[in-house]
Image (cartoon, rainbow, N blue to C red; front, side, top):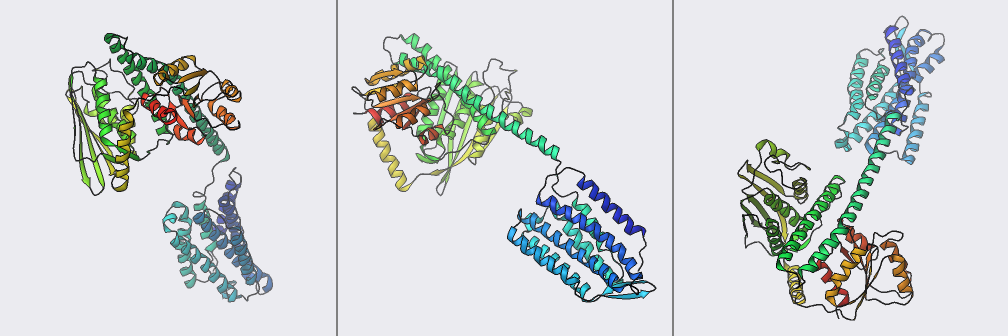
Length: 609
């Protein structure tokens, strides 16, 4: 059947334009783009050969061998194109090319193409000089191509979830239109349209392949590098800021706590000292909030689950809230269900943090009236659902602002209370932490009358042998807490480049009656040890100029018979730093500002007689 000359020429011209558009554009050389390049080239030659097939039927009587070669080459192009296309489907499904399998596959296809030229082919004339081909060569080619398409379909069925994307549209078009072409060819054997279907399929593929412009990729890579550098710079800045703020806070808190324990200080002065400590705690909360937001943005905030004492956390929250209320004319009401087990398994530190954020927020925005803190529970099997509510009679929140409430750096209601301090970080951190623990947070508020925040968090109940161990350890701790640690005769070396921090350490350690020596660099510390000085404990600052504490520790461990416990003393108090310092070889960890309870723990562990 003569289909005319214009349609085949149009298809060839379209294919040529597609080749020009594809190869004239810079692209990333991947297996996908490499395979696609071969598909459009093979299709271009198949269209030319298909056009020649019309001419071959006219010379068949004179040059049968030449005509047969043209027909077989057309069949070979068909098999080659389907083979490359099947390889493309395999690559999309498995994201790689198995080199050994690929080589075997190439040899099978090459052998399959060669066979075409040895099988017989016949031209059946329909009248005049037009006709169609038949014979073993034709049947073999169609069966071969059918098997390859069946293999592609089988691979998709085995990876159906992955195959439901636009990348596989070309295969679906090939199956549909290929089936239609097969049916048409049964009724009209002289109709050759498979190459046109291939042309349509590769034109669809042009819009589905991963073929990003090189310049765009370079720009994206540059933007990515810039973002990584900016994020690293931010992390470095926050770490540095934490150190720089915590260092003076260590002095403020250290001297303030010493004054509180000094019997010579008047009660009036002690009130002022307590206010100084409260202001220091607020500043410390601000630093911790900024660091938490940074970790949230970097997806580095972690939930670390351990056993913890719920009653202890509740009592601490009550004491901290009372301290924040201070002289405000507020009634603070608090209660919890007595059915809540004493020991729970979860991230107790984060549970305490989110509740404290809500309590602090209520105290901050309530000038008079009340703040009520309640913990109810629902126990099922070995899980207790803590339902925590914090209600206040404060300024409340407008309904249109409730959605913004958990957005960082948003402070709502400031038009009503402009003197209130804060950054708006607490609630944003609270929401993220509660969600990370698998809980929910909700808020109800009437503007001008108050707010009710509710958290629900599931925690495991500690039971069995683990509970017995915790109760035994608690009894031991209670007994130990009554002891006054006497470290007289013990020697402690404090290493810190900041003279003020050295004075703070001396002041805090005096209570233990130990002998204290101070040096201001890692090299001085090493010199003392090398010269034969012996100590029972070394408190070693990390962030020092010239030689850091970590570098100093490495050199100390190189000294023969060095076995003095070394506790890192650092303002680098980001979550996870304790574990990092212990992995470096430090025996223990103390953060600045130094917490008295933590210092007691270290002294008892290493200096108790």
